[in-house]
Length: 210
View (cartoon, rainbow, N blue to C red):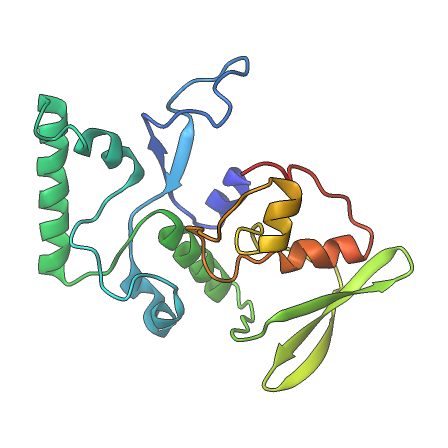
C-alpha cells in the first residue's frame, strides 16, 4: 500500500521512536513506522474547507516523533532541542501564513490531491446506506444525495473505508465489552459499514481489538 500510494505522489516520513504495534512478535522494534509528511493545506485550494480539522489552528505544529521528547523538554537536553525545533517550525509556518497539515489530516489531504490529479469524482454529503448484492456478489451501494436515495453500480468493486465502531454503544458492549460512551474518534465512527458487510454475509475479525 505504501509503495502504491508513494507512486501516486503521497509523501511519508519515518517515525524513528515509535514502536511496532505488536513489539512482542519476532522482529518487533521501534523505528519502522511511517507518518504522512507535513504539507501545506493551501495546496488543496477550495477543497481545504471540506477537510475535517480543529476549528482553531493549534499554536504548535506537532508531529508524532515530537511527542516523546516534548514531555521532557525542561528535563533533558534532547527534549529541549526538540522543543526549540518545534517552536521554530511553528513560527516559520505562522510567518508564511501557511496551513500545516500533519498526521491524519496530511494523509487525507494528500489523498484528495491524488483524486483531483486523476480526475476522480468526489461526492460529499452523500451518506452510505446499504450494499447491493446480487446472489453471492456485491454489485453496488445505496447512498443518499440531495434528498434522494441513489443506487450506484460498481464496475470493479467497493472499498469500505469507514473505520470501526467506537461510537456504537451496542457493538462496544457486545464485542469488547466497554462501559461508558467516551471516544476520541469522530462522530461518524458508528460501524455502519461493518454492519452493512455483515448483512450480506461478510466475515469479521478483530472485533474485540481496540
